[in-house]
Amino acid sequence: MTPFPKVVTHLLRLLLILALVVFGGFPIYWMATTALSLNSELYNTGQVPWPQIGNLPGMIAGLGKLPLLRWLVNTGIVAVGTTTLSLMLGALAGYALSRFRFHGKGILGFLMFMTQVVPEALILVPLYAMFITFGLLNSLFGLVLANVGFSLPVAAFIIKGAIDAVPYEIEESAVIDNCPRISVLTMIVLPIIAPSLAAAAVISFFAGWNEYLFAATFLMDRELWPASVGLASFIGQYETPLSAVMGAALIFSLPAVAFFLLIQRKIVAGITAGAVKG
Image 1 (cartoon, rainbow, N blue to C red):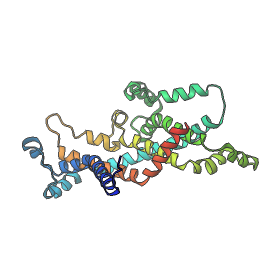
Image 2: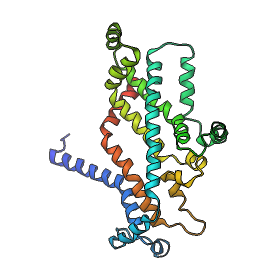
Image 3: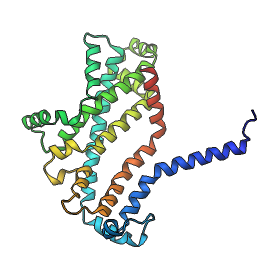
């Protein structure tokens, strides 16, 4: 069998990459095209498949009337808080599951895993009652805690899988030199598993950035709304301004996409390490 010439192989590779780029970028293109369309066009004659740049000033003026900046700040607070708390607690939990032997370790891991198969809606009412008791209702901090409940197990198991791959002899030499256990974790182990930490950070960040159900239930004050709840408020009984929704959604997506592009290489390395060694 005659192998393909290098030119043909290279051309096929380029075509495949181009197809993947078009496939992945089409939703963003369509969001931008919809945002630059008039509502009268969307609901009557239909959307044109190319951006109408002439409508850009009108779209910017329309978005300027919305509290997008406040929504994005609230979303950023929730996402960063969820990521920080998940990584801190996940590092401790992952290290304990990886290095220590204690009774109930298997059950603890199983219960943490079970949080991923329980729908959020199922615990919404008991969580609501608990938040009333502890005064966490209508609070961004309370929303962060609710999100951490779901992102922490994922972060802990990713970190545990990475720590399993770190030779224990490295820690032993530090312990012999009277290095405290917490310093062994923060100064020796965590820098080694930095790619896995990045993967856990991205998963936690997106869990906080995109969360809607808890935010719509626990936050009654409009000043505290994140962007996900703000975007949903556009939906009206008789009319939904799709162009404004798509314009706001496009702005809402850009920080998350930029964050992902910044550390995408470390994400792949971290998830792969956790999957193989876990």
